[in-house]
Image (cartoon, rainbow, N blue to C red):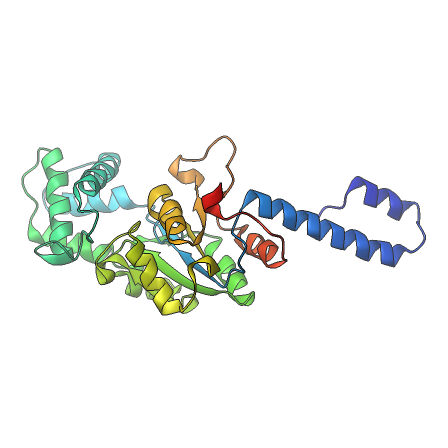
Length: 294
């Protein structure tokens, strides 16, 4: 930690009682830092015992999303450039999200299950391309590709942060709107051992922000809501959904997604790097507001 100018002056002048002063100054700096973190990241008045994470754009992302769609569709006779594929994937995801039943998981509630939902996703993308319907082989290949580790990339700070949090005695879990491929994917990426529970929407039958998916995580962790901090990039699905159930919550606003405000607001983080310090500041005993009181 950077020393304050006043502290530097005392040390240079050889002030008597140097060791005791250093201990007092250090403790004061730690208290001030904890207080600053507590004001910026309000986590509630109850000690945090567990942290739950969203997955996509929180722990990992798909940097070659457009390229993979372009490659697979091109191989099956539907040419599309990677930028156009990426744009259409985002458009179709938003379109189908708006049409989804908010009380049900989109994957498991589809008449043909998860694969049927993703096949319809690909059909709609091809409709927007004015292309013929894709073959079932194209849909099957994409479903397989995105269930494998090589299509994904873990954010660089994630392994270290997860290790630090576990070293602080925190229990970790996942709460994500995903299908049944998620546990295997986390295992392939080497993240699964960090998590005590992996809760995903197709298994629970509802998606975030439905309180029931958060409730399932609480059942597995056997904790009260206020003892759990949820971190995710969705303002509605993660931050507001978790807070509505009584969790502490932090909103992750990663720069790569073009969502970074000029100055991150209270309760917002730009990546996971600061998370161990934020939780440690709360554990120091500094009382802060619950996120719902902001």
